[in-house]
Image 1: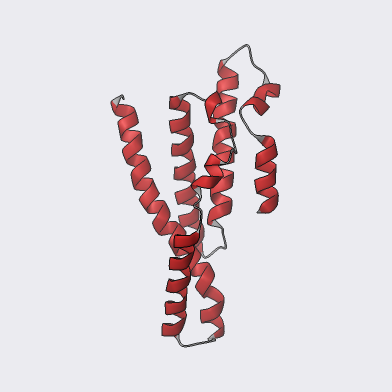
Image 2: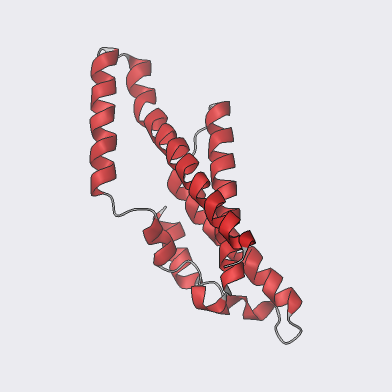
Length: 157
C-alpha cells in the first residue's frame, strides 16, 4: 500500500475516534435536552439515566456500518482509491458538520448525517468516474448508486 493510503487509513482512524466523540455528544445532548430543561428529576439522576441509555444503546445497536454495508452504493463499481476517498470525504463531512451543529446548538442526527454523507460521497465519486470516462454518461449513475435501497433508508429516516 502506498504511503498516501497509509496516511488516509490513519486519518480515517482519527476521524472515527472523533466521530464517536462527536456522535455520542450529539446523542447525549438530544437525550438530555428536554429532561434537563423541564427539571423532571435531579441533574444527577438524569445523567445516570442518560449514561445507562447510551450504554444500552451502544451494546444493543447493530451499528451504523450496517448502513454502508446494506448498500447505499455498489462498492464493486468503485476502485480502491475511489472507495478510500469516498470514506475520507464522508468522515470529514460527518465530523465537521456534526461538530459545527453541536457547537451552534442546532438539532441534528448522527444517522441522517452518516446516510447522507455516504450517499453524497458516493454520488460525487460516481460523477467523477463518469466525467473521466468518455464511454459513460449520466444515465449510468444507477450502476454506482443503489437507488432502491437508498430510497428505502431515506424513507425510514
